[in-house]
Image (cartoon, rainbow, N blue to C red; front, top):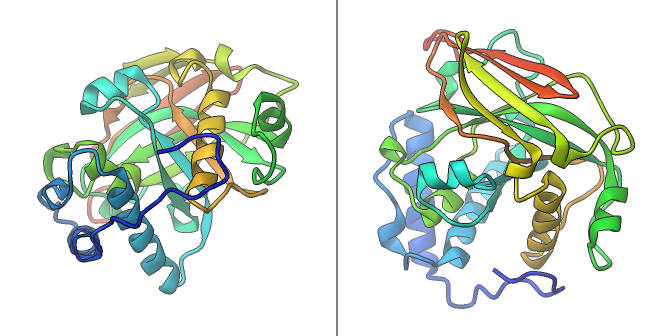
Length: 278
């Protein structure tokens, strides 16, 4: 990946047949709710251009079926999560409107394969991030407000047996997400100073601070803004950006209840339905 340029990443060497085979495998896993074997054997271990091409192909298929993009997610920003998955750099995925389950009484477990939850800060953009140097001042100015969020990550790869190539291709292991109602502007809090603790069924399973997210969730947003622009699909006003985990993720099986307290926002919660509910 390149950073800080206005040129799209060069994908001229991507093997189109391999991209389509990988997309088909992940599509079938999603449709049948049966995880696939890893798809990394189709590409070189560090071939991110091909992995993002798979993600783009899957995104295009969803758009053709009527889905609507509402934002992006940044993944693998926390050293704890990187260690859990054995990777050493962030990635990004696409958020679709039907992934937002904030208004539902329960998270529909039937839509998920092997979910885990992580707590994070979500930014809502008030301005496009297309032109300019995408430096700290521009990034801050583009944020309309922030909310506490639970990202419900999921993997179409069996047993979470993933490398960076697998997770990027699989839309950065995206699943669903929940946004809390309390909104704060950047004049009201500093993202790097937030403190988080998360529990599942009353047992604390994760904790961290804003500094765990690439040193500052705004650093993660800046990384995404540059990278998305490099890939030719920059961030736009109105989009929701899940900035990355503040601590380790935790499994959330059907029937479990998750609560994350992210100060100064307060809590964000999710109750997972029985498996039959989709």
